Image (cartoon, rainbow, N blue to C red; front, side, top):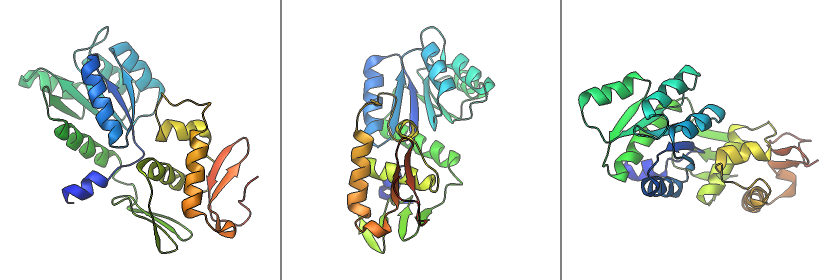
Length: 241
C-alpha cells in the first residue's frame, strides 16, 4: 500500500497512552488525535493499569519509566488479567537486555526514545493491522458502501464526503449494523474518556450523517431508538421509535 493510502487507513480506534512526562504525553496525544484516534492518557503506572483493566483499548502505548509502578510491571499485570490489546513500549534504554525484558513481559513492540513521531505512527499502524486483520475491506448495508482502507463512502453509487469523525462514527455503526448501540458505547469507541456524556455532540454528528446520506425519508438507514441509542439497518420497520 502506498504511503498516502496508509495515512488514510484510520479506524474507530481507542488508544491508552501511559506517559508521565507531561510535555511528551501532550505532544503524543495531540498528534494521535490529529490522526483521528481517540486517546486516553494516564500519568503513572497505577492509573495506567486501572484504565487498561477497566476499558477496552485497541492499543496501549506504555512508557517503561513510570511512577508508582513501572511499565514492565503494568504490562505483565495486564497480560495476567487477560488483556490482549497490542502493547507498544517506550523506553529510554537502548540495551538489548532491556528490550528483551519488555518483550518477555508481554509487549508486542518497543520504541527507544528519542524517536520521530512518524516512526511511532508507523509502529501504531503495524500493530493495529495485526489486531484487525480479519476486519473486512468493505462494509455494506443496502446501497451504502464503505471502504475501510481508502475511507471512500458511497450511497447509491454516489460519493459521500465525510469528516474524519463522521467517518469514524459511520464505520462504528456499520460494524454494529442491525444492533442498537447506546450513546455511552459510541462515546467509548469513537471519542475518548474526556467526552462529556451530557453533551449533544453525538446527536449533532448523527444529524450530519443523516443530512449527507439519508436524504430520502423512505430509504433511511440510521434510526433512533428513544432511550436506547441508534441503529443502522435497512430492514423495513426499523424506523425511529
